[in-house]
Length: 69
Image 1 (cartoon, rainbow, N blue to C red):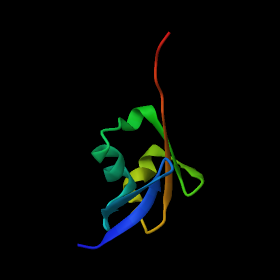
Image 2: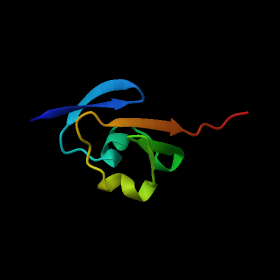
Image 3: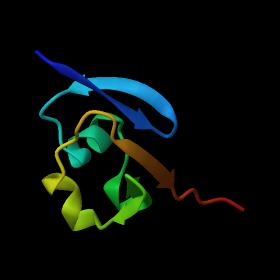
């Protein structure tokens, strides 16, 4: 299986080549309703996550909403 390298929140990680952005987030146990995702410097709408197939050297930033007081 070919692996590709992407950056997730500034850290380089290796992934299966046919992974979608949505699958990546789910493998990281992120709740899709509670995150904002930037993919190669563009904000991604939640309904677009499953259509984006990750490529070599993609850069992903994930911001999570955290409640507290």
